[in-house]
Image 1 (cartoon, rainbow, N blue to C red):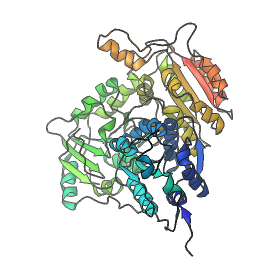
Image 2: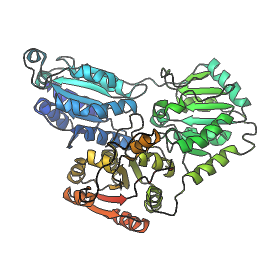
Image 3: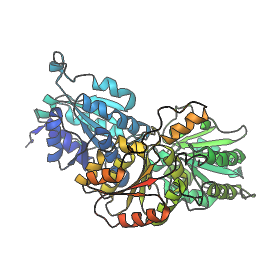
Image 4: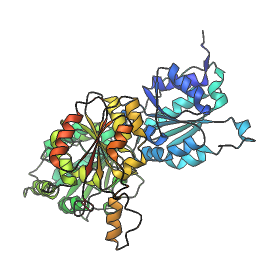
Length: 539
């Protein structure tokens, strides 16, 4: 006997069948039926304080559990609020399903309050946009879920008219559409690349976000070890190889100081392997950074159209299958030990000085926090420095916005990570401006019992922008805030939202407070006050 479901029930069951466990957002009248359908299918709907925060919590959960991220927004202002996090999902390769409510088409012809074309606004920042119709809800959801996960992951928008969500339907919920694995590249292309690699005496590998999404870390580590190939990663790729490994040269792409060490090493390489390397994270200096005479071998799941670099050998296939096919008898490599020299230079360049400042903050917390701690970083000067100083033992051990580099992501990303791995310590690094921008999600931490640790670096300035301002010899304008008598009291703010708050100005106090934070069942906010311009020369 065919069961009769509402459109919202079909949406909920389709997502549940795809492994979704949670949905995040803020209710509105236009999504009430959708939310009921999600709940009936066993998904936990979690109320947040802003759609932007909800999307990042969903992403953080996905990084820990693999559960497809779902964000729900009502029409008009709810959709508009979410544009930033949806754009971030597109640039950071997150397979988000963005469910939005809308009025029925006939009503939209004469009713204009809060009504605009959601699809037109979102199309530039999503892989696809669907408007569900009665009788085709199941197939629309199956297509949306498959598109979000296929190839390079990304967000997919699903606009749900009220009438479609509420109407009864005899449709059958469809199983998820299986994606076709990338498989092996053509034999001729493999053999050509292998011939080049076999002769290489100074090979170097660069890996990025696609390798993380392919779970290719173990295969990359094994391949690099077996063939004595040093590895550079993007920031998103941190931990693909344990960063304590002598062959790992850490993250690259945002720090001029790090690039000043890594790019000369890269220039010495005779062969460069690009392993799931998506240059969307990289700054302008990484456009076609190869020199003439270098052989570039790129392994990618799909053809690249970004134009950021070229490669003579493009192997379209999965990393896990392609790397074993490139195994070879390696000649003696890097006889001058240049990669080891570069690794030592990086360690020296980012070592913590004796005086108090951001270096000591990161160094102290790395020593105090357990090795398995998951950290997140907001955008700003602190992110560039901590990305160089914090060793990640495994992928997704450091979460950040790298493609879009948006502010106010660290706390909700940490919330999602804690939700997904409640047994693991989670630490969010955020600047004072970034925390103020998304302070509402502190209430979500308390509401959902997420006892993360937050370290806010307080210098009363948009430090990274202020540095760029000075670097271009422009006057100080619009980058400084706070000051005696009116600076934000972050510990009091934390307590107002149900957490524990404390201010520190030295490493001993920071170490003590961080250790205590690990014992609490509420979130802890540590306001680390650092001198102004403390990042000068840091990265």
